[in-house]
Length: 235
Image (cartoon, rainbow, N blue to C red; front, side, top):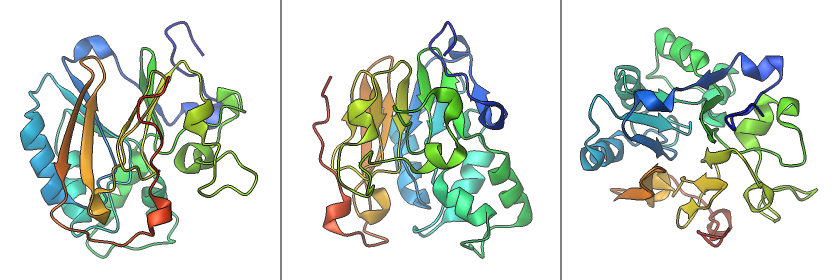
């Protein structure tokens, strides 16, 4: 950790870590997993009404499961005041584990260029979270894109990393689908299951402002046990 509370990763991650100067932006919104739900994203952006001086940062998983992944990629790519980290679903495309026929090579090249962490003073955005049992420099891309439970069996049994992480930095994350957003001093979880019929959530930390847009419908199914309902504002 450096003097302003931002992480110092090992060489393999540091090259994929984008540092932002917070003073260059008025508001900074962090947005949960979009999963190809362009209509809902457009509705959320309409509600936020960001100016060119506002920054919108996505927690990754822009793609897959929803109806218009290419449309989401095009929207974010073409917006100079939008950034995203690379989530596990982007990684699956790059590894060839999953395919999306609508995406062109230049779309995949852009996805490959996305960082796995974005940070500013006292804050960090990653897709899934951090493992509080490891030093920051010991994290891998797999950790940042997939960590959830700290139990030996993993899965959806606690304890969860966000219950153990003390910070700094305050970590903004998606990946774990939540009934309600988590807003805590050291962690903020923003995946509220838009693609599963939930909502798309944005959070502005400086103003402690949460904005949500309900999904038009469920585009994909998910078992009830894979929706978490942790206390949203625990210290």
